[in-house]
Amino acid sequence: MKATCPKCGGPARRETDTMDTFVDSSWYYLRYCDPQNGDAPFDRGMVDYWLPVNQYIGGIEHAILHLLYARFFTKVMYDLGIVGFQEPFARLFNQGMLHYRCAKMSKSKGNVVAPDEMVERYGAEAVRLYVLYMGPAEDDKEWQDAGIEGMFRFLGRLWRLGLEVAEAGPADGEPEGPLVRKTHETIAKVSDDIERRFQFNTPIAAVIELVNDTYVAKDDPDQAAAVHFATETAVSLIQPYVPHIAEELWQRLGHERLWSAEWPEADPALLERETFELVVQVNGRVRGRVEVPAGLDDDELVARAKELPRVASHLDGKEVKKAIVVPGRLVNLVV
Image 1 (tube, rainbow, N blue to C red):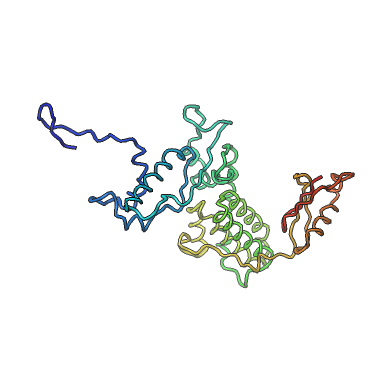
Image 2 (cartoon, helix red, strand yellow; image 1 turned 30 degrees about the horizontal axis):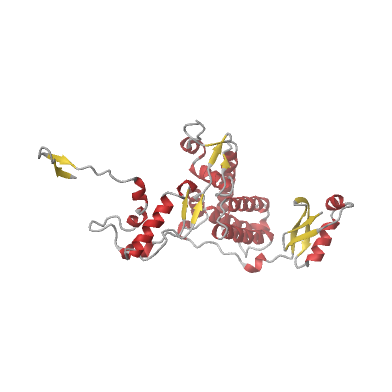
């Protein structure tokens, strides 16, 4: 930056702000891998080890500027032999926008909900949990002031359950029964929703349901082992959302460092059910539910569906043109 003035010959400061910001944002991810390098922008061995980025999460507004430019830069550097990969980001996910009072949150519109105020009132854990619970992460969502209250109450409920189970201490015997089966089903659902489906709201709903079932069973002394297992599992599964509360409860339950513990694994044998709840729709609208044996063929499922009184009333005198069967889940009768 230190230079000589071409006019007077005196000391001068060279202008350095000469590039558009998108030039920088087109290759910053490479520099992140080797930020202290004083001899080159980065070392190829370093960037080839860490990159490409496994998962990029960002707003859709970056799609035709930053993300596109980053791809151009990477392809050129690959052709020059500077990096060993052609695409900078292996997977892209665009999150939705938050709305408040039917408009996108914006300072200019004066409809921004200040996170600091919410954190001060409810705590960071409740705020984070509510934002992720509002709906699918890729959808736009409407902020509801009353919604965070529900997450705040749930965390209080989980906290009380954890302390009560911790005070009771380890239970004798092997955990078994319906609550254990429910716990393994919750593990399977949460794991699949996060890892494969990349959904974050439905796992929270599943843990809330597990905690509610655990509360029902906690006063039964014969269920002590199952309650202990279910509580520990609920704490473990909710940890990515509320790490501080989960770590504290995990220690109270007699363990250390939940953040480094193995993720729970569902027992496949406990995921097999003798019956399941069949949802019955007529023209896409739910008209009934019935518990049926697992393993029934499609014709039998359709027959069971037609026997339901509410379904029969919607079929009265009408021709069923098509029966759509989703095994293990639903029957949709098209009339």
